[in-house]
Length: 151
Length: 151
DNA sequence: CACAATTCCTATCGAATCGATGTAAATTAT
DNA sequence: ATAATTTACATCGATTCGATAGGAATTGTG
Ligand code: FES
Ligand code: FES
Image (tube, rainbow over the protein chains, first blue to last red):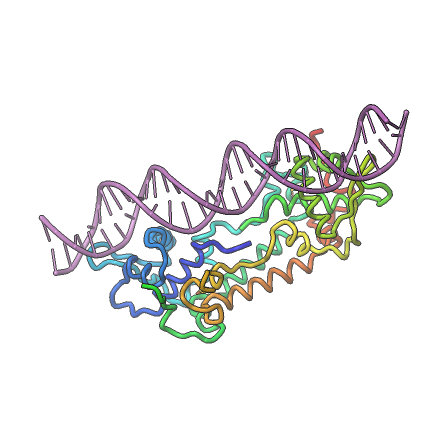
């Protein structure tokens, strides 16, 4: 039960953008170097974030990315949906017969637990915004965002 | 973010054992047929459950499995630990330098969220016991446990 | 003892997922 | 024109996951 690298990379990128003035967009190249993340991979993620409307992009010479929303409006639930897909812990109740153990999902023994954990996770994810994340950070890390030692 | 098939299979098996009288142990073969789960795979899982002390096994001719603890004593957290390993959402703070973004984990921007979600998940998992799961089941399914149509 | 039913150990396989890389086209300021 | 960029798509290698297979060890039964 780990979060994917996509999720972390997206989060780090968003946090970086959050702490930058929105004068000029920041290129994927710069982002990847500042965060020491693989360039191509990061741009894939940024494209996904753009499609989801969390980020705006400017193409061409002085192009790059910046936040499309205010930091208070971007929740970790949004990021999760982009990078991890649906929050569906179910495996049962999804078979070709609509079940796995021979029960319908209504009768499923595990469904009550699944519903509970899904709601809990959703609420927790939604409760964290980009803004809150920085404030709640363990040692009250302010801007500037995480820096990188090597290159 | 799905639970593995291992987790569900383990849960179904445990729930079945829970609803059986502890007179004679139930073989892996019977268990797999009643739940229509792959035989070999299920036995792997049962072995793991045994190693974790959730299940006792009897070898030989009339051998099989039965619960090693009372249904109130077996939580979904226990099952989770057996089938899904550690509940460590962290990727960062685990690099060769003990980090990923150049920060130590103490300074990690995401750690507060990670700690939160880890605790929340742990508590939720621990709050569900085998016993409670049946009672809390959507439609108050009692014993007998889930049955199977085909074969 | 011979046999059958079982747990248990380990190896492997195929498919899917994941992180990452590569190629090339479209866009845009200089 | 050129350089820097986003964007789309294809692919690759490693790992994980669900599942299967063979065989050894154990134990009741005849
Ligand atoms: S559909 Fe049978 S246990 Fe969920
Ligand atoms: S170690 Fe840098 S963000 Fe977690």
